[in-house]
Image (cartoon, helix red, strand yellow):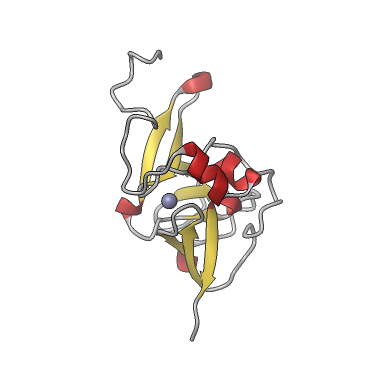
Length: 148
Ligand SMILES: [Zn+2]
């Protein structure tokens, strides 16, 4: 699919509520965060700080601080990345079908700033309420533990 075959605006064309130049993002993020959030990189499996975290709280977008996921929807997927069966609210994330490399994968982005979070997979049989797995990079999110 070439650039003329897509009916969805690409990242650079769409306007997000939180708009910064790539230069500004570079200032704001570490090189590793920048590579994942702004260049759709993927952190190595099992290396992320939240892979097996069970702490109760809210996960925010590391780029713009929007609340994206709650710990109640995090589950043990044993896939090497933090996995959630649902976002905090559907409008917090943007899902974009990626058909490159002959496969169909659905990319997940923060709907406020357009940063890359990870991918979502359906029908894997994890037995969660949605049968969805939001496979999210630890580098894309930051946990705010709930204070009693
Ligand atoms: Zn964001």
